[in-house]
Image (cartoon, rainbow, N blue to C red):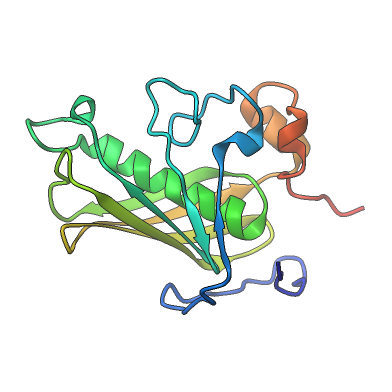
Length: 186
């Protein structure tokens, strides 16, 4: 695995969402990396109500395929808009994990629901980092269904150190999560 060279603190670095990737630089990502029984709605393999997403890192992008079930309907036959955004948010979060090897928290979302997302029809998604600093990332997420773009969003994620992550989570950081916290200077 290769990593970008370290950047000076606070230096912004921009990536294009169209950057081609090495077809050999592909990695299946797994929600179980956060420990058994982790409750994430999007990626936990054991959450009985969750999406059980299986994101894939492809170079500096993360992709996912998902078929929305009947239980995720808003209007009949259409996936609830909030759950469409949940799918996109989860995909954005996995870019932080898969590319930066850190854990981040959603700070802001700007999105457009371009077309209805149909229940029972595969949705594919792609997320890429378009701007980043050591403490934050701006992520572009696109969802497609039946050949058409159905969702476009920009997500800002904040990457906290261990103490900040514990404060947000309201608990001592589980051992499996510590390696994903931003390192503090010292």
